[in-house]
Image 1 (cartoon, one colour):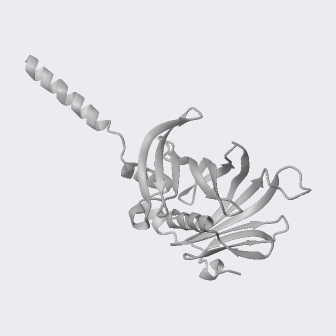
Image 2 (spheres, rainbow, N blue to C red; image 1 turned 135 degrees about the vertical axis):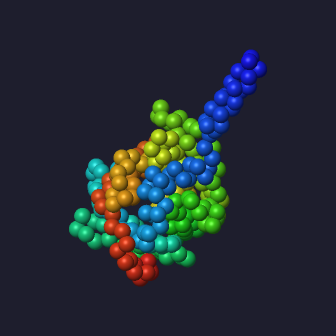
Image 3 (tube, one colour; image 1 turned 90 degrees about the vertical axis):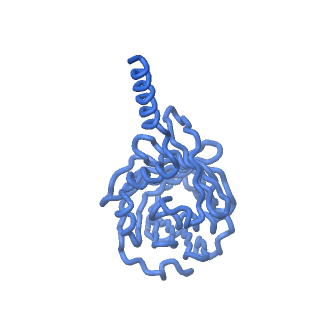
Length: 249
């Protein structure tokens, strides 16, 4: 009887241990996909036009005091086209950045420039994973590695390291309860076209027509200063965006 009890105890411990195995990279990707709205809902998207209220806390034009508030739209078309536009209060475009699936350009004060190498790689990576996230990352040249959990500001996060096909690395901090990305650390291409370390934060996720969107985002520079904030306004799905939108003007 003692041997039988010992055997049952070992089996019970083994079962509990098997139930408590840490998640794999694929497990985390699947959880993120479900939290975003599910693979089926994401698969039917062909384009998206997202509108944000952009608040610039630093880098204002000479003579402008305090935060500068503008509207920003982001237009994305499957599978690899993306464009940003920033508008003056009067409605005219003051800055654009665009990637058409092969090449890209900036437009500032009516002056067009080709994207730098860093900007081109950043826009390409954004376009590659924007609609579906990471479920088919191998087909997109993206490598994922699940790192050890980290605690940031008293919040424990699962940490997913993302390496694109150009060997650019970012770390995604995923809330283990909601499975939303709440923090991103890595390098972005700044307005000068050079790599710059940054932290992005994503808060206040809400479902909009079946897809989850953070309703607040913030950019924090290497010195810990919040340089920009985005407040979600609206999103439109499958509007029939024409390829001409992404052509150089």
